[in-house]
Image (cartoon, rainbow, N blue to C red):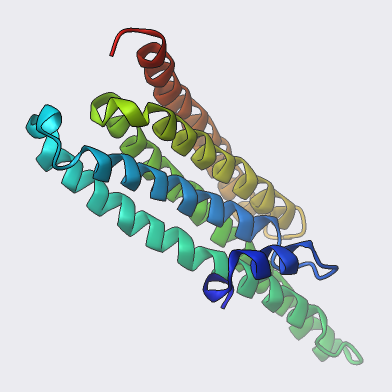
Length: 211
């Protein structure tokens, strides 16, 4: 399991000449990092007298962001597993017409799954960005930069995941599936960028103004 490795071991494996883990797992990791930062800002707000009126809301934010962090973390390994299944499908025998048909179907199914995993990352990014905005607006002012980094990291997760969806879609023959998922990617990217800019506007305004 990638998530059980040390940071150094994971990075060494990432930098090696094997194609997985790759960008998809990194996108999921970025999502986990962004969610963890949101949790940090929330936790640094909870228990402070100055923020007593938002303590209940912060506790709820932390609960949700921690759930998302766990989800993103699971997706780190799921992305690599999905890629490996595609490689396994390509390794199936193709000596007879029947084998070729089975191999083609297996490749198509595995590639669809490989596209759906990063698409799931993108969907969770939108939820995580909503929480990042809450901590930027109401969280501990001394951690404003962390709220901003959370949003930027989450948007990077969405952008990276989108590339991984798109490269898989380019190999899929099911045009209806490709069309539908391509529209989802475009919509999620647009939403991610918009929500990220909303968070960054709050952060920039507060950092430059009186606190």
